[in-house]
Length: 394
Image (tube, rainbow, N blue to C red):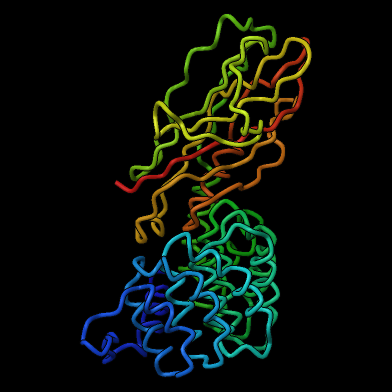
């Protein structure tokens, strides 16, 4: 995949060689807002120079995100293409382009359809619709689009679960490049691609010598993810009195500097709950005031009778991904989690994310949470809370 990403970057930069940043009549370099304004200029060459310069600015071009999204529909495909590559590397503001890029992947007349698929893979959106568009693209008659769609699906993590079967189908594609991309993508999905293991194992001893090592690497990655140990801490009795909160579990340290302590809701009586600010809603998350690196759940809604909140016991470690490190992504991912009365995790929904694979890591960690259900009048009840995961590149 490293070679593939390098290929995408070379493609993005190929048309920029020899270009000089535009300046005004006084010879000064233009600011980002000035360049953003030039994306709407009547002269196509002015628009192209502005797009090329913004691309070279990388994350510093983030303030131009809105104008760059508009430029995706520029009548000159060269301008649109440079806007795509710029949006891919400006961080979370680039996610505003996901709906337009998704539509472009589906547009059979779109000249930048392949690039749109590739950029979706770099942005790593968590929504279902981009993944659905990429799955549709795996059936295209265009081998380049099938290849780009396969690689993009491999970057989407949990969002690409429905793409595992199409990727397995592409491992027998008539195009060698598409076959290799499909196997690489399945490997990148790790444990999410577990259903593909039988097909991948068969490829390790198959007739295609180019696929054998790729399939072996994919099998190893998937099996490694599946073999990751799962904590099995005992659940305390449901009658734990509110006055005796459980000991705080050890913090969960994510790889490469990201930190996500196991959030904890201490059992308490509703009567002792502090009155929230008037504008606060029960499901909204508030920034941690004591430890910015901790992950905190929102308080459960108040109700009639005695009620204790969810007690969070443990969870798997979220990982700081290579893609996030390349883009120096820092911030908080908020995940809404349903804690069911039967002691199992229900729906897990992304509230706000960072992309670069961090959303998927936060959601994976949330699905692994072990907990004691909330109780009302002595009976376990289902409740929903927002969990915050802070990621820092160190």
